[in-house]
Image 1 (cartoon, rainbow, N blue to C red):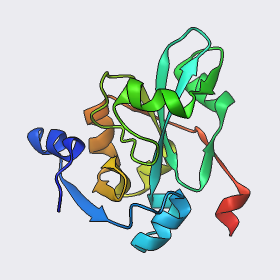
Image 2 (spheres, rainbow, N blue to C red; image 1 turned 135 degrees about the vertical axis):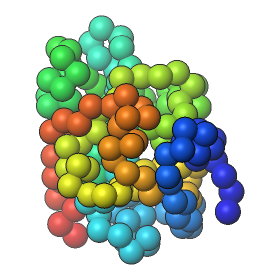
Image 3 (cartoon, rainbow, N blue to C red; image 1 turned 90 degrees about the vertical axis):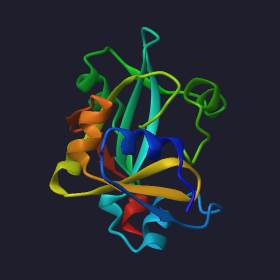
Length: 161
């Protein structure tokens, strides 16, 4: 098993994490959860946005949900947020689309985790590379990332498939 930078950073702070590999060609979050045999509600994706004032913000939501942009703006106490363009992701965070982790970005950005994560002992987030998820305590992840739990996700029709 390859150790990613995100996993090494958590290990250095004694944050328990368990890697789970899957086919890196699978890019749909719902399919990743299904492949791992985990409930879709426990597998999270990391989304990067920009506020109307140019502040970058990170949101972690269940893979089969969408980020509620209005709720996200409320949580961050900003007027508005918009998703960044995919081509901006790697230069900004160091991560590629499909492998973006809330741990180990080039810079620290304010981070918010959907409050649904608090219902679980562990959740799955990207380990910073396509094909590897890491299982981690949502509370320990939040502490590491100085993240805030907030109601930021909305269910999509895709989740009902």
